[in-house]
Image 1 (cartoon, rainbow, N blue to C red):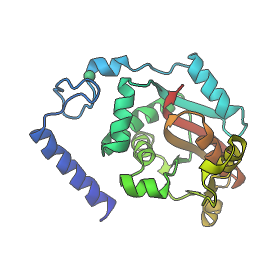
Image 2: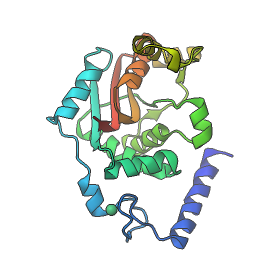
Image 3: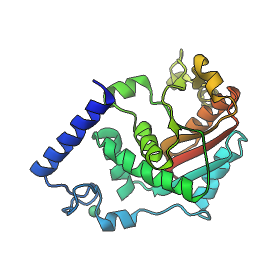
Amino acid sequence: MTTFFRTMLRTFADTVLDFIYPPTCLACSSHLPNGRERLCRSCWDSIPRVTPTLPLYLESREKVVASGIMSDLISLFVFEKGGAFQHLVHALKYQGFEKIGRELGKQLGERVIELGLQADLLLPVPLHRRKLRERGYNQADAIARGMQMVMKCDLTTDLLRRARFTVSQTTLTLEERKKNMENAFEVVPSRTLMVKGASVIIVDDVLTTGATLISCATALREAGVERVIAASVALAE
Ligand SMILES: [Zn+2]
Protein backbone atom coordinates (compact mmCIF):
# COMPACT_ATOMS: atom_id res chain seq x y z
CA MET A 1 0.00 0.00 0.00
CA THR A 2 1.38 3.43 -0.81
CA THR A 3 2.14 5.88 1.98
CA PHE A 4 -0.58 8.17 0.63
CA PHE A 5 -3.34 5.56 0.95
CA ARG A 6 -2.05 4.41 4.29
CA THR A 7 -2.18 8.01 5.56
CA MET A 8 -5.70 8.47 4.12
CA LEU A 9 -6.86 5.28 5.76
CA ARG A 10 -5.36 6.27 9.10
CA THR A 11 -6.95 9.73 8.96
CA PHE A 12 -10.32 8.16 8.20
CA ALA A 13 -9.91 5.59 10.97
CA ASP A 14 -8.92 8.36 13.43
CA THR A 15 -12.07 10.33 12.58
CA VAL A 16 -14.31 7.29 13.09
CA LEU A 17 -12.56 6.41 16.36
CA ASP A 18 -12.89 10.00 17.66
CA PHE A 19 -16.63 9.70 17.02
CA ILE A 20 -17.02 6.37 18.82
CA TYR A 21 -14.61 7.18 21.65
CA PRO A 22 -14.59 10.94 22.33
CA PRO A 23 -10.95 11.94 22.84
CA THR A 24 -9.54 12.26 26.33
CA CYS A 25 -6.25 13.72 27.52
CA LEU A 26 -3.49 11.13 27.26
CA ALA A 27 -2.03 12.23 30.59
CA CYS A 28 -4.99 12.97 32.90
CA SER A 29 -7.92 11.40 30.97
CA SER A 30 -10.04 14.56 31.13
CA HIS A 31 -12.42 15.14 28.22
CA LEU A 32 -10.98 17.08 25.29
CA PRO A 33 -13.23 19.52 23.45
CA ASN A 34 -10.96 19.55 20.39
CA GLY A 35 -10.48 16.12 18.81
CA ARG A 36 -7.15 17.10 17.27
CA GLU A 37 -5.54 17.75 20.65
CA ARG A 38 -3.99 14.88 22.60
CA LEU A 39 -3.33 16.66 25.88
CA CYS A 40 -5.52 19.10 27.80
CA ARG A 41 -4.32 22.66 28.23
CA SER A 42 -3.14 22.20 31.82
CA CYS A 43 -1.16 19.04 30.96
CA TRP A 44 0.46 20.87 28.02
CA ASP A 45 1.37 23.74 30.30
CA SER A 46 2.85 21.34 32.87
CA ILE A 47 5.58 20.21 30.43
CA PRO A 48 8.81 22.10 31.18
CA ARG A 49 10.12 24.02 28.17
CA VAL A 50 13.71 24.09 27.03
CA THR A 51 15.24 27.57 27.21
CA PRO A 52 18.71 28.61 25.99
CA THR A 53 19.96 28.95 29.58
CA LEU A 54 18.39 25.80 31.05
CA PRO A 55 21.20 23.73 32.66
CA LEU A 56 19.88 20.48 31.11
CA TYR A 57 19.95 22.11 27.67
CA LEU A 58 23.47 23.45 28.17
CA GLU A 59 24.70 20.03 29.36
CA SER A 60 23.02 18.19 26.48
CA ARG A 61 24.29 20.70 23.95
CA GLU A 62 27.79 20.33 25.34
CA LYS A 63 27.53 16.53 24.89
CA VAL A 64 26.78 16.75 21.19
CA VAL A 65 28.71 19.89 20.27
CA ALA A 66 31.87 19.07 22.24
CA SER A 67 32.38 16.02 20.06
CA GLY A 68 33.13 18.49 17.26
CA ILE A 69 30.98 16.63 14.78
CA MET A 70 27.77 18.56 15.39
CA SER A 71 27.37 22.30 15.41
CA ASP A 72 24.17 22.82 17.36
CA LEU A 73 21.31 21.26 19.28
CA ILE A 74 17.66 22.29 19.08
CA SER A 75 15.07 21.01 21.52
CA LEU A 76 11.67 21.99 22.88
CA PHE A 77 10.67 20.08 26.00
CA VAL A 78 12.05 18.38 29.09
CA PHE A 79 11.17 14.71 29.36
CA GLU A 80 10.18 13.96 32.96
CA LYS A 81 9.43 10.46 34.25
CA GLY A 82 5.68 10.22 34.80
CA GLY A 83 5.14 13.67 33.30
CA ALA A 84 2.68 14.64 30.57
CA PHE A 85 5.34 14.50 27.86
CA GLN A 86 6.09 10.89 28.72
CA HIS A 87 2.42 10.00 28.10
CA LEU A 88 2.58 11.80 24.78
CA VAL A 89 5.75 10.10 23.57
CA HIS A 90 4.54 6.73 24.85
CA ALA A 91 1.40 7.08 22.72
CA LEU A 92 3.56 8.05 19.77
CA LYS A 93 5.91 5.08 20.15
CA TYR A 94 3.72 2.29 21.42
CA GLN A 95 0.06 3.11 20.78
CA GLY A 96 0.08 3.97 17.09
CA PHE A 97 -0.43 7.73 17.49
CA GLU A 98 1.85 8.59 14.56
CA LYS A 99 0.07 11.93 14.14
CA ILE A 100 1.55 13.15 17.43
CA GLY A 101 4.97 12.90 15.81
CA ARG A 102 3.97 15.21 12.97
CA GLU A 103 2.43 17.75 15.38
CA LEU A 104 5.57 17.80 17.53
CA GLY A 105 7.68 17.99 14.37
CA LYS A 106 5.84 21.10 13.22
CA GLN A 107 6.68 22.80 16.52
CA LEU A 108 10.31 21.71 16.25
CA GLY A 109 10.49 23.00 12.67
CA GLU A 110 9.06 26.35 13.75
CA ARG A 111 11.80 26.60 16.38
CA VAL A 112 14.47 25.91 13.75
CA ILE A 113 13.05 28.73 11.62
CA GLU A 114 12.85 31.09 14.64
CA LEU A 115 16.53 30.44 15.32
CA GLY A 116 17.36 31.31 11.73
CA LEU A 117 19.00 27.92 11.12
CA GLN A 118 18.98 26.37 7.69
CA ALA A 119 19.65 22.92 6.32
CA ASP A 120 19.58 21.11 3.01
CA LEU A 121 18.23 17.91 4.40
CA LEU A 122 16.21 16.47 7.28
CA LEU A 123 17.26 13.03 8.37
CA PRO A 124 15.34 11.02 10.98
CA VAL A 125 17.40 8.62 13.10
CA PRO A 126 16.73 5.17 11.58
CA LEU A 127 14.82 2.73 13.71
CA HIS A 128 16.08 -0.79 14.13
CA ARG A 129 14.51 -3.00 11.44
CA ARG A 130 12.91 -5.32 13.99
CA LYS A 131 11.34 -2.40 15.86
CA LEU A 132 10.14 -0.90 12.59
CA ARG A 133 8.34 -4.17 11.82
CA GLU A 134 6.72 -4.25 15.27
CA ARG A 135 5.69 -0.57 15.27
CA GLY A 136 4.85 -0.15 11.61
CA TYR A 137 6.48 3.29 11.48
CA ASN A 138 9.49 5.18 12.77
CA GLN A 139 8.47 7.93 15.19
CA ALA A 140 11.49 10.00 14.14
CA ASP A 141 10.21 9.88 10.51
CA ALA A 142 6.87 11.28 11.67
CA ILE A 143 8.63 14.11 13.54
CA ALA A 144 10.84 14.90 10.54
CA ARG A 145 7.77 14.95 8.28
CA GLY A 146 6.15 17.52 10.57
CA MET A 147 9.33 19.61 10.41
CA GLN A 148 9.34 19.34 6.63
CA MET A 149 5.78 20.70 6.46
CA VAL A 150 6.93 24.00 7.94
CA MET A 151 10.55 24.11 6.76
CA LYS A 152 9.89 23.06 3.15
CA CYS A 153 13.27 21.36 2.78
CA ASP A 154 14.18 17.86 1.62
CA LEU A 155 13.79 14.81 3.81
CA THR A 156 15.44 11.46 3.33
CA THR A 157 14.87 8.21 5.17
CA ASP A 158 17.20 5.91 3.25
CA LEU A 159 20.52 7.67 3.60
CA LEU A 160 21.65 6.14 6.87
CA ARG A 161 21.26 2.57 7.94
CA ARG A 162 22.04 0.67 11.06
CA ALA A 163 25.16 -1.37 10.57
CA ARG A 164 24.70 -5.04 11.37
CA PHE A 165 25.93 -6.16 14.75
CA THR A 166 27.60 -9.51 14.89
CA VAL A 167 27.83 -9.51 18.69
CA SER A 168 24.99 -8.95 21.08
CA GLN A 169 25.42 -5.73 23.10
CA THR A 170 24.66 -7.58 26.33
CA THR A 171 27.95 -9.50 26.29
CA LEU A 172 30.03 -6.35 25.93
CA THR A 173 31.66 -4.18 28.59
CA LEU A 174 30.63 -0.53 28.86
CA GLU A 175 33.72 0.58 26.93
CA GLU A 176 33.09 -2.02 24.20
CA ARG A 177 29.45 -0.95 23.98
CA LYS A 178 30.50 2.65 23.44
CA LYS A 179 32.88 1.54 20.70
CA ASN A 180 30.15 -0.62 19.19
CA MET A 181 27.69 2.31 19.24
CA GLU A 182 30.24 4.58 17.52
CA ASN A 183 30.02 2.42 14.43
CA ALA A 184 26.32 1.65 14.73
CA PHE A 185 25.34 3.61 11.61
CA GLU A 186 26.65 3.91 8.11
CA VAL A 187 25.78 6.01 5.07
CA VAL A 188 24.40 3.83 2.29
CA PRO A 189 27.39 3.77 -0.11
CA SER A 190 25.37 4.65 -3.21
CA ARG A 191 24.13 7.83 -1.51
CA THR A 192 27.44 9.40 -0.45
CA LEU A 193 27.67 11.67 -3.50
CA MET A 194 24.33 13.19 -2.61
CA VAL A 195 25.46 14.39 0.84
CA LYS A 196 28.95 15.73 0.11
CA GLY A 197 29.09 19.32 1.39
CA ALA A 198 25.47 19.32 2.56
CA SER A 199 24.11 20.58 5.86
CA VAL A 200 21.87 18.08 7.59
CA ILE A 201 19.52 18.15 10.58
CA ILE A 202 19.27 14.78 12.28
CA VAL A 203 15.96 14.26 14.02
CA ASP A 204 15.10 12.21 17.09
CA ASP A 205 12.31 12.09 19.68
CA VAL A 206 14.14 12.15 23.02
CA LEU A 207 17.83 12.81 23.61
CA THR A 208 19.25 10.93 26.57
CA THR A 209 22.96 10.17 26.32
CA GLY A 210 23.33 11.64 22.84
CA ALA A 211 25.19 8.46 21.75
CA THR A 212 22.76 7.68 18.92
CA LEU A 213 22.92 11.19 17.48
CA ILE A 214 26.71 11.28 17.79
CA SER A 215 26.94 7.94 16.03
CA CYS A 216 24.70 9.12 13.16
CA ALA A 217 26.61 12.39 12.87
CA THR A 218 29.95 10.58 12.79
CA ALA A 219 28.82 8.46 9.85
CA LEU A 220 27.52 11.57 8.05
CA ARG A 221 30.70 13.57 8.56
CA GLU A 222 32.80 10.63 7.37
CA ALA A 223 30.72 10.63 4.18
CA GLY A 224 31.53 14.31 3.60
CA VAL A 225 28.56 16.11 5.17
CA GLU A 226 29.68 19.67 5.93
CA ARG A 227 27.45 20.54 8.88
CA VAL A 228 25.27 18.46 11.19
CA ILE A 229 22.68 19.93 13.57
CA ALA A 230 20.84 17.77 16.10
CA ALA A 231 17.12 18.30 16.63
CA SER A 232 15.32 16.41 19.36
CA VAL A 233 11.77 17.10 20.53
CA ALA A 234 12.76 16.56 24.15
CA LEU A 235 15.75 16.20 26.44
CA ALA A 236 15.86 13.63 29.23
CA GLU A 237 17.94 13.86 32.37
ZN1 LIG B 1 -4.67 16.50 30.94
